[in-house]
Amino acid sequence: MQFTRQYAASSLELHLFFARIMKEHALFLMAGFTPANENFTREAERFKDWFGELLERAVALADGAVSGEAIDSGEFLTPYTIQAERQTQQFTGIPIDTRLTLRETMLRGGTAAERDQSLFQEVRRLNQRALRLLDGFISLKQQILSHVLSCRMFTMNYPLLLEHIIREARLYRDYVAQLESGGRLDREDMRTVEQFWNRIMMEHAQFIRGLLDPTEEDLIAAADGFARDYARLLEASRSAQDRTFPGALAETRKFRDFKTAGVRGIGECHIRSVILPLLADHVLREANHYLRLLQQGPSGQERP
Image 1 (cartoon, rainbow, N blue to C red):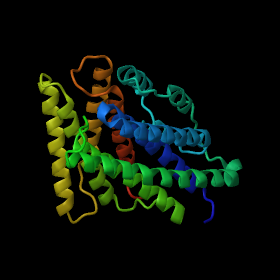
Image 2: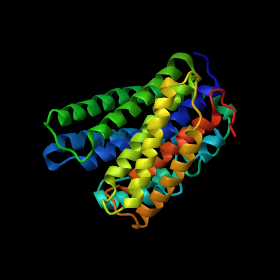
Image 3: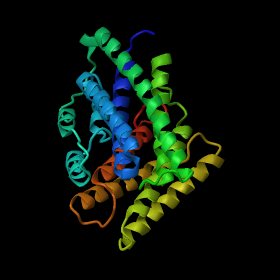
């Protein structure tokens, strides 16, 4: 496979987004286990640390090698990420390396032309490491889901959430495999992209609704509304003849704003819930990621 700058940039942008997501999946798994499953807690902690190391390497390689648009999108970090990490560490006792997040705030966009060949080898090693980690992490998540569904394990995480994070890990793996086999990401089928992320957004709304305190009636009603809206988008996209169905961009902008208010309210202790601050920030970053995909469209050109 020949080196291209796009291969390096796409790989590193993928890891900056998804490696942090996987690291946090492992943390959420840890926070949801009971003392009866200490072995699973230890295994999830290993994946948290391994994906943290992967992210750390991606951050080191990415300075000057990824697009400024990706850095500015809010899908890697938000203005609330560091505070959310600190609060979540305080609440759970699970260590979180906020120094890595601070280093990531210093990333600059660019093309890294002077580092082309050396960067190619480093990125290739990073991608191969990601594939191995994802194989193991997907297997662990599937094992946890199987145990929960067969009443061999109790966890505070919904079975649907376990299925949700398995799907996200599989998508990450599929993208890395695409880059390693062909040197580029094939995201031309925007209808498939929208169906995947509309489902993710719908489930976010369902999780938010289920984790809010019962007294938060207005927020519950708003989350229910978003869940219904994304369900309608999903149904429309399945029956539409066109490649995409209008509405996802406007809906996701509204949901992004709702999530932003939620991150602030949870961080400032104005919202009653059992939502970890880092989970609130996590779902906001995923909305920002989806918005960038929608705004680029299939050709990578900006949409209005």
